[in-house]
Length: 234
Image 1: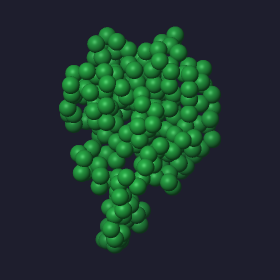
Image 2: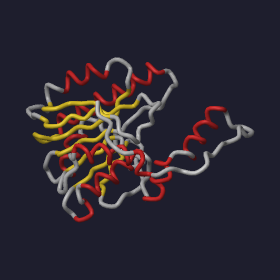
Image 3: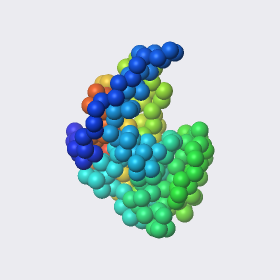
Image 4: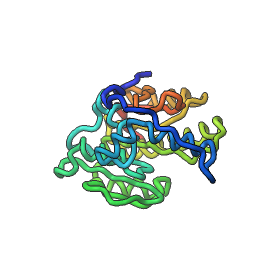
């Protein structure tokens, strides 16, 4: 498993901000707020105009593996709030009219420059054909998925739910990717992620787990990166 990125690039922050457990604020809410206030990626995302700190995860992975190429066609599954779509649009030069980025989310999201947004569940039967049509009739070079279901706090339940999303995204990717394409999806450590890797190796030339520096050290979060789609499905 690789660990792309460089946390030191963001520089050291000053004194740590501490949050009091105020009226109506639980200990877990206090811890979350404290973590946000002291997270250099959160501050850098705001400075650069990214919609989420997750933008840096995609940036770091692509810096190393370079699958978001100028002129590329990208589908971003469960895209809200749009941090990954922003990075993808920049890297495929969508604003220059070279590449295309299609974002799909069942809850919808605010408009983004050079990104086509569908408020739709990608699991619906007509979704693959709709997105290929939106890409100008061509299949995608890359399918991205930073999807996660709402955390329950029960580690194994959360693991099973996120793996189900990653596997659904994988099935979708097989239908819309062109040969040589890439699928990148969030997963969680928990026991079954190795099985998914074995399955994907039948369809992709290289499959690996990556954990960018922007992923918190104490998080079970990983990303599965499958490159070199062999085609012949969907």
